[in-house]
Length: 499
Ligand code: ADP
Image 1 (cartoon, rainbow, N blue to C red):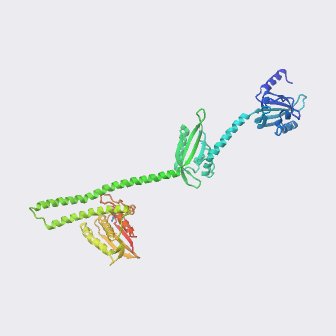
Image 2: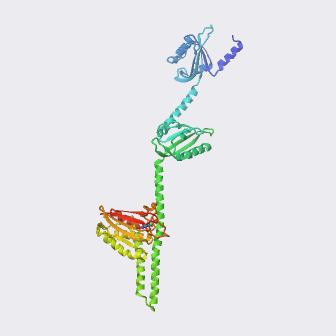
Image 3: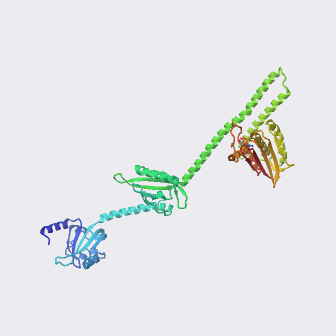
């Protein structure tokens, strides 16, 4: 039994409860009692004393009458969270879906029989709507994130990645465990980029500065592609970072073009430097015979003036002219080399092919150079066949021999030089061997490039053009040239020509 005081208290709770409460009687669920909240939810209809289906006719077709019947028959209470119910909030108005947390419970009626139901619940529509709105926004975001061509991610304020879009999973072919900080344990970042990535990411998380980086990410087929990683902090209305939103954009092609551009730039700089070096060496090389010529001419001048009173011997004059001619020869050679270089560069080095005897050409050249060899204290050993007829440019081949013999003299330290020409298997083979300074293995191929030298200009002067031009000529005749050598053990240059 409840006291009148309790009665009043209960009545007060009933009236002011934030929950809706109604008492329904019997199998037809006649409204016995409702509180103001209940009236509010059913649109303030006049329902007391009426059957449920008359009071709220839109209830027909919804599951509530069945549920109420079961509770009344079995006595088992019914609980539901966020159950939708369609209600008319105004008489004659349209139906509106409300969500309610609901309890139906069988209780005693005034006769003490278990014939009443207490319907009791809370309208949670606003909460449910807000959540659905959020879910809808999330869905929209995910669709958006999946549709974009970049890889995208969201991380919490301490850097745990809570979301990756589809592109990411496609890129790594669904590899598991990359969320959170898992990615750093997986074979995704290039080993050379990983630590830098962790450092940069940690720095941004600590400072709130935008995250920007370029790194290589391993695609599922094992190929590393360059990506630009970016992330910006997302702040709430209080200015606190609540998440990080990031993307990875493929910049591989761009990066590669950058690389090519850099290479071109390096090449350009190298060739500019080579040009400057060449100019400085070339002027030095030209200067030397010019100075000698000048001295020669001054000395001759003096002699001629003296000659007024004194005789100059014929011998002396001859020797002076000889020296002058040698210097002019050197100058001519240098200028010819430079001209040939520019002709090769512009593709204008042309050949006049004719049938010629290689033996004859070699004899000519060696005879002409004999004096030079003896002046240098060297000796020429020549072994030639009777005849070797080839189709070639006579002038250019003279140049080849002169170059090889001049080098053997220059770098041969006065050792004897052996020249041999032979024929076998439809090929002519020429070798020029000295016993001089030799060539280090790493330079054996390099020396055939223009301007490349294996000695410094201070030791033995030269432009580094002779072998380059020689190789061009030999190759234009379908032949090849190479050198076999060891440092300090002399060199043997070989030229092979098809017959
Ligand atoms: P240059 O003699 O003007 O330097 P070359 O193109 O004729 O130019 O030769 C290139 C380089 O090859 C030389 O600077 C020298 O280092 C090396 N070289 C050429 N011939 C010989 C040789 N017979 N012995 C040793 N080194 C040689």
